[in-house]
Amino acid sequence: MTSITLSAYRAPELRLPRLLAGVSYYHPTALAEHEELYGPLPLPGSHDNTGRRWPESLIDLVERSGLTGRGGAGFPTGKKMRSVAARGGKTVVVANGAEGEPASCKDRLLLTRAPHLILDGITLAAYAVGADEAHLVVHGQEADLMASLENAIADREVLGVDPVPIQLTGIPARYVSSEQSSIVQYLSGGPAKPTFSPPRPHERGVKGRPTLVNNVETLAHLALIARYGDGWFRSVGTPSDPGSALVTVGGAVARPGVYEIEMGTPIGQVVMMAGGPSERLQALLVGGYFGAWLPAEFAWPVPMAHADLRAVGGAMGAGMVIALPVTACALAETARVVSYLAEETAVQCGPCMFGLPALADTLIELAYQGGWGQAIKAIATLVPLIEKRGACRHPDGATQLVRSALTAFAADARWHDRHGPCHGVGRAPLLPIPSDEEREWDWT
Amino acid sequence: MTYRLRVNPIACSAHGMCAELLPELIELDPWGYPILLSSTVPASVMDHARRAVDACPTMALLLEDATGPPLLS
Image (cartoon, rainbow over all chains, first blue to last red; front, side):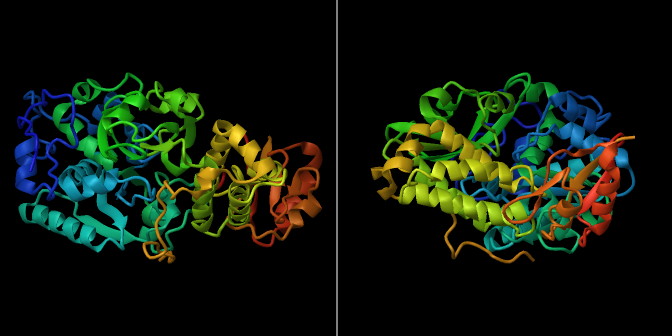
């Protein structure tokens, strides 16, 4: 068992790891262990590590820290908290631990190994926005995870750590069910499907009340910022993207897994943290299935940060990097993912429920049978018919992936279109897609 | 005052009335769902826009005051 002990009650000297500092390979960090590592939960009236009375305003502190959401969108957390708090009245806090991306494991790692960091974050957020209801949402089908979180919450209840009781809810493990409006609708008694917005959750959320929805990693960062301050948080990362982040590295690398990086770490260095390429690489999928393909050499020096990735047509997403070897067919991989995304439509909006299957079929044909000179043209017609026409960003995420594939692999696509499938289509699939047994089809 | 059109894509079930009544601003995609050619509504077609909004069987076409925040929020 390896765990690095931080000196309790003061900011750790070590730059990284932060979130993963106390994580054991074998078991979740118990409450006593957690408090020994990080000190007790700082709530109003207590003093922070420098002896100052803490905190005049947690929201100010979070805003100064520059923390952004770690669920994908990267929205400033302090601003989101302020907009909920400004609505006043009884508000609701929701921690989103329903990791919908098949290629991402970072939320699961935190939930199974460092649950008390997340639970601390929920209680702090509830205090900051004046909530009297707090939820932790995970996939309902993961019975072991649900049980271990129930235990962690019960341990805290005995000691009265959380003034607002934290309710654990299991939601359907559908791709779009982890979208914030889906969770809000589910907690209000409806199906776990996205809703038409505005109104957004901070305006009308769970049961019509202003609701703060944050990713569980974001809340874990909040638990550390409350203890060690905004200056500490900013001491790693870049000025525009401060702090650390969890990333999941997969595909053709020597040691796939979850790594904690400084925001702004070059993508190539992230791949090297995971043991480096296990084969010669052609491209990296950065940001998950709503992210973008980037040619490997081009991506290597690009910093893992929201602004830098947006500038090259990519997205940070929930921090995934998947390495694609030269022997694989990028079009086949993309086609399989788009087929999966098409099956995961909530069947609510026409352009998504009709457009995504049509796009997926055309991609499958292009990749596995060849396009007869028609497929690229067909894709170019379909993509604008799908984009920005759904209630949520599900269809847009899929088209962004397709756009980036046709940019990064333009020559391959032309070859497939004219001559038929390449040798790479015979290779075993690389990008993970849940099997039919693992998948859930219900919305309630 | 300027107005803008918005489609609630969840409510819309491709009846296509809007494209009949407001061809100046609305086309249908291959599956029969509306594509807005422009979201702002010129004064000259305001009457047609109102009629299209009223005629939508699922109340999915929304006419909102573009000068302020979306009325629906």
